[in-house]
Length: 97
View: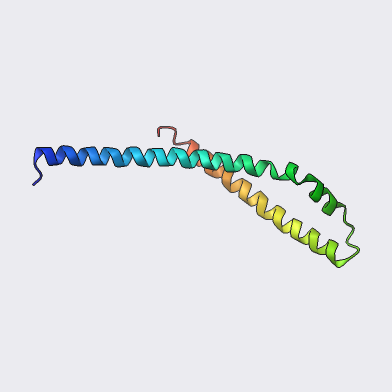
C-alpha cells in the first residue's frame, strides 16, 4: 500500500499528465485550424494555373493529362477540406479543455 507522500506524488503526476494532454490537444486544434487556413489559399495562390488548365480544350495528350490530374487533385482537395472542417467541428464541441 502506498504511503501518504507516495499518494500525493502519484496524484501530482496524474495531474501533470492530464494538463500535458490538454495542452497537446489545444495545440492540435490550433494546428488543424492553421491547416484549414493554408488549404483555403490554394485556389487563389494557383488561380493562374487552374484557369489555364480549365481553358484547355483537350486538343493534345498534355492538355488531357493536365485536366485529369487537376480533376483528381480537386477531388482530393475537397475531401481534405471537408475532413479538416469536420475535425474542427468535432474538436470545437470539446470547449472544456
